[in-house]
Length: 410
Picture 1 (tube, rainbow, N blue to C red):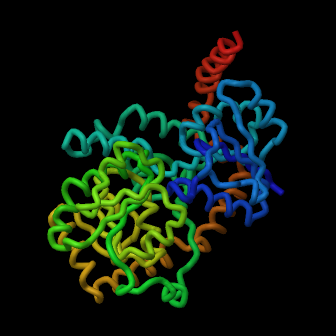
Picture 2 (picture 1 turned 90 degrees about the horizontal axis):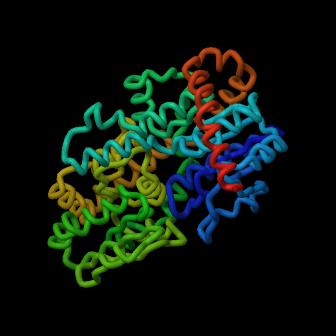
Picture 3 (picture 1 turned 90 degrees about the vertical axis):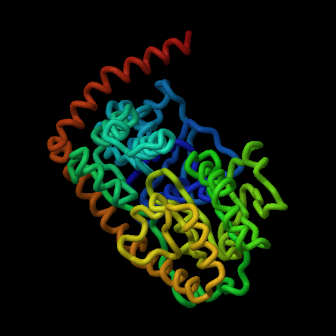
């Protein structure tokens, strides 16, 4: 059995975040290919954390700026180390390179943090996304992390193209692997509630994630009043982990704007609703809520940012609209029109079955890992920028970390 260590930014929470679902999909991929997995993180676990031990995965709590990690990783001596987001690579990449130099280093970006940040700044400033905004300090850190790793997993084709065309990152360092899903059969789909059985609107998303919180406020202040004017008896239920007082104060039963908070069964939340609303104004990567809407037969109304790179050239499972007035009009139209609604449902099935089937990506990914593992020296010789960045990281980050370690002991 090949050994892999996954260094998590947080412990996976598949019922709370799309990133948690994505990580669990990767874990299951490695398990199905007979990898022995160790999952380690600096973060603390909570009641929403997935019980990885139930899958036979060894879990470990690790420390920042501590030589204990060196002992930990040398003892396991993995063939592969996967970093969950660039921050964990910055924290532990140099230690992996020093203690297990032959281990294949993989970066899972989840989404491009620098792109999300640049779009957020662009949104706040009400300006176009210029190169000055796109190339920021986070960009330099994340791109450097991509170069230092042997392979980086990219979830969005838009982001893959951005890295290749705008930043000239060699294609051999990047691997496109989106959400990994099972196919949806017509038989299974017919078990979900029908158009007549479903009522009201819904949306969902981790409230700590700024694009989600912004979308909820946008719904409350701009879009929902327009929909409620046409459908005065309709309700909108907002689900999501990590609710807070500022979120809960938006709850207004009279207006039909209901803050429900975390829900254990996302399937139930989606399959009982008629329409999913996702008016995202900025963000990056693929949107878990929109994937779930397709999986559970709930047409969605979203924005260009929301649907980015999610459906190739297939018809969306609902409508893509950026203008708030038109967004509300289309939401009402799909809510009332059974024929439109059912066609949107079918579009969602088609998108899942053509764009996200795990069988299309898993074997290609494992084959790529095997190839790079066998040709690791040549692969790294062809990545001089990565070797240079790793060299300087070992000289700078290493001694900063050792200084902090020594200071902590004192």
